[in-house]
Amino acid sequence: TAIEIEGLSRGLEWSYGHTEGGGSGVYSWASRENQDHQYRETVVLGRTNMSMPDFDELIERLRPDWPGSAYHLVRYNCHSFCNELSSALGVAPLPDWVRRFAKIGAGGLDV
Picture 1 (cartoon, rainbow, N blue to C red):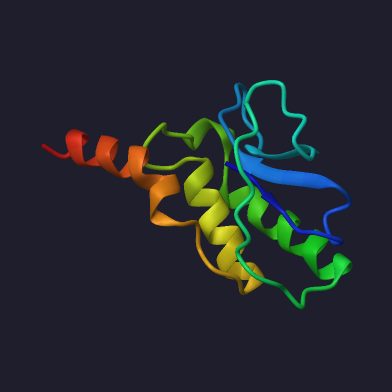
Picture 2: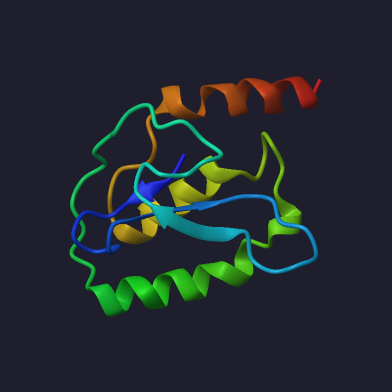
């Protein structure tokens, strides 16, 4: 799961994933071209009034809060990051059906 901001993110999608050896897990790639994931569907979350400089600043503010070593498949993942990013952009969160697998998995871990 990733977020692309049309006209703002310069044709990039932004997401979060696991990294080895420290550093932020926030990363970007050319839209629909991530070799590790198969593009499935675009879901419009709304419009943001954020400027490009403000967006760049937002990404830099988020990076330290999302270390790649903290990634967890069901509890702290790309869906978690995309929801935080969408909230900061002032748009809708990810639809429940996108997060369903992670929610079910997290529920199983709590048993």
